[in-house]
Length: 380
Ligand code: SF4
Image (cartoon, rainbow, N blue to C red; front, side, top):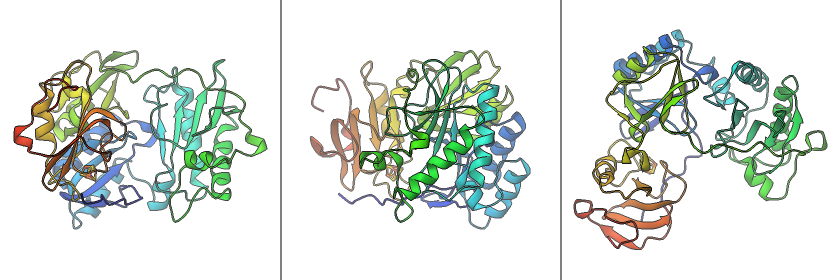
């Protein structure tokens, strides 16, 4: 099997990444929210400058696909006019913050102050990120982040280094500077090397935050991943494979402000329901339990197309089972184990049971045209 390429950096809007279908231009909505006008502008930019498809990433960013190098400047001008682009690549890289989609006004204000504090801070490894998860409930426990602002069981704020069970007490006033100080400590403690490094790995090597940020309190219990449908803030609209057409984004933006989530769903604030639109899936649809990356030809590393196979197999997926169809062993769409994983190779698909895309398969070289699912425990 060909080893997947580990790039070690993520695309941004100002620093796009070349892929099999052109440039991938990733937009991190300021404050974790798109106004209706920004939603429409993003949809228009995807249609005009890209291939009209928009990905929702596992860190709640939106990425336009199929842009050209020649059209990148015009795309950025349109995004900048909508207030969706940072001043420069360094500012864009520093604003690596995911905000709970259920943020209340104090949480939004805290996230804005954190962004301000980080704008003055050091450059961190590309994948090093912050989570502001102190809304009414804690929901980002399973979302990748290195430094987390959360609530303790008594409702107070804590600052927690990922990989550490406890966090340090902070207040809304002290939290932004404390988070920046913890990031600085991460660098000084040797957490980064060659532009890479994650907090949990540093913790696993035995490092502990400095005395001023000594961990004392556990975070409040986390809720499981929300399901599509009504929530107190509006409606969660689920997106098949986390990719939607620009027309659907524009139609959702017409219903209200949008909050991207890390769960392949957009929160449409203030809406009571969403209509059936291309790319959306309802709660209970087996596609909600199917993960498939871009695959071939959109990803240059993919060894086979993925989503047509995933869509066909979804119909036979047993209740509760999770299927992952991956274009290579990297497993971008679902880094966690799945009941069944099909990993593309140059000669078909390998089958992994209760594992990840790169784990040892129990069957090799399966012909996708001959694949059907009946029971996750039965041999294919
Ligand atoms: S897992 Fe899929 S999206 Fe990720 S590199 Fe491999 S083929 Fe590309």
